[in-house]
Length: 232
Image 1 (cartoon, rainbow, N blue to C red):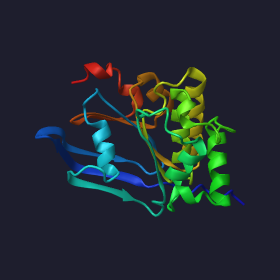
Image 2: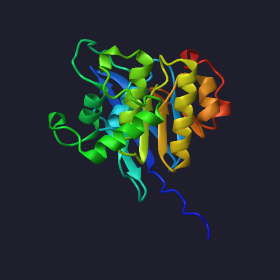
Image 3: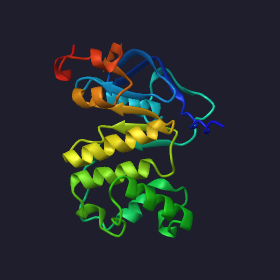
């Protein structure tokens, strides 16, 4: 008997997505599809609209056009934002942050046993086992980024959205993130990864879309050769 196939994450369909900020066009008629179960990288120059497109997908920014998920297994969505500025004096532990970001009930009520176990497993998968009691503000930038990745995979998502998750992480950390994302993708998770590193894109991606307000390229990653800041 064949082993059960992993449940596949959804496809993400962008159709004629346009977006303005302060009267300035950020996205102009962007259309492409992230295939179900793909590891898809979104690349382009700074200010080209990548993060705005992801925020529109998450329902955080008004836009024209259509964004939809297609497939029988839409399920949970995990999101790793760009590493934010953080007040290092804020009295919040890693466990506090995980509880705040991964559960529906108020964090001050504490996490239930199942949530605690899932959060501990997610921290272990991102190389942060045992970090739960530590103040979040005491961690390095790379460690904080790993915690943000841990919260995105607890509970396990069917769609994982990453906004430069390896920025500021040392080389072992980069390899750990790449391996973890590859494992999740092999389990059927659809991954949409904003990425500036073309060498990394070629290592990890099954498909790539280049945008600079509009779609400039959509296809195989090995065909993207220009430095992103020079893309026009």
